[in-house]
Image: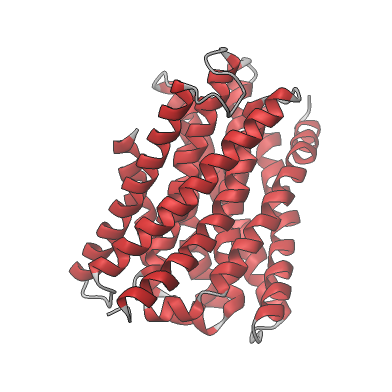
Length: 172
Length: 194
């Protein structure tokens, strides 16, 4: 258990380093700082829900990884749709809460745009990472229930911070 | 089932859980937003945040999953009193893992920032913060997981479906709250971040 935890920690430190590199922007706009945990957490949740569903479908023999696989396509579509439902709420919530606790310096529209755009990109990436990790686990004869969720949540943390960084650079 | 039917079912089933963890995620964001002064003083603290939060999820997620499996197999009784040997050793293992990995993250943060020539607080400051925050949040999380899983199991809920949400909702909020507390304690004892 401990060696895996050390490796996952090193992966997470990569995402910490990205956060550290745009610390000045985050400290200048508290609403962006509020977005960090909820954005990376929600991306990881989208991925782990998808991972759990794909793994169950695989165990039940309902997943084939063919291009016309309806279970795969349907779950991927649902993940994207969920991101367009949840992330605007994330943005609105982060804006409102930081308005309560600090002087908000970013417009509501800016925070909404940052959250929704990051969420859409992250949903696509979460689908890709989850499908590849589930397929790899299946090919190597591992139980996807054991491996895919830790991989997906930790990779999502890194991708979440990187995507947030890129979107903030473009939008703010 | 068609693609649309599969998508509709998956969407409907996932939305409630995602919404609950969204609220918890926003709360932990507010705590992080309230840490601005501490983040300014202790350089490198922000780098530690994702690793610290992920450790809570990784250690106590798997602790909860083990607890659920042991309940299903009848290896442990869903009672906190009585001091079951297996339960005590599982809790100890989770706490030790969480503490070791938190300290490792602090040491690694210090060395990465030193190698890259970036500003950083002293090794003692970072390790002390990680140790205090790791121990306190570990104790709260272990207690929350045991109590909620046992109570849920006795009321007929499948512990496997309770563990994940409990760990993600309590983990991030308490993780950041105790990180904030630890920074304040360490700054009070050791002075500035150096």
